[in-house]
Image (cartoon, rainbow, N blue to C red):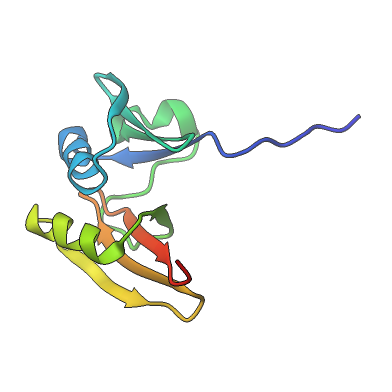
Length: 131
């Protein structure tokens, strides 16, 4: 008997300040809020849900493990496809979000820029150079 593995449904990010994390999502990506309660907010990224969860609620998902400390070095990068990295990067910078790097052309054929959200997660926007 085999089990079929489906696609990625959701990524949950632990956040210290839910309001700041929501503001970042709305400023950088402009995605509509799909779900919200007192400890979380979720956004639809083309069929993958990005769930922002208050770090105080994290133990119910990861116990007995602990949520990582805020401010520790990033251990992942979430990449979001955009039509034009330069235009999106300018728009985000005008809204007060400072890029970590970019826009820059990568040797593997994409143009990228990266930002860090208020909880320390690194987000990259990218488009193919072959467009």
